[in-house]
Length: 138
Image (tube, rainbow, N blue to C red; front, side, top):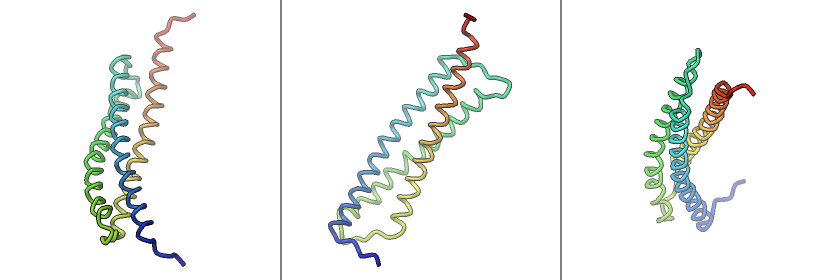
């Protein structure tokens, strides 16, 4: 049997959700910096497109991720505005929509971080391969 949360437990949980969502804004800022870093590497190292079109594919992947990031950048403040009344007024009880919205944003951000990690690895691999090709044989 699950016992209902006390008001102080509920208040603590709601505050934690609110704080977590504010941290998401910082995470989004970090991913924006990563996007600029990725673009800079591609431009700075003049990585040529190979026969498989990996540079073109990589640039398209970076832009698609950035579009997802921009979408999240708009959704998180909306979620914060949605959560704030629950934090300020404990008489207002969160419903399943509350958890659903939180979980959707959490999963979107987690998946985006995973995709950025894969993109970074692919970009570094391509850059290293390009640098080895350009390096004189020793």
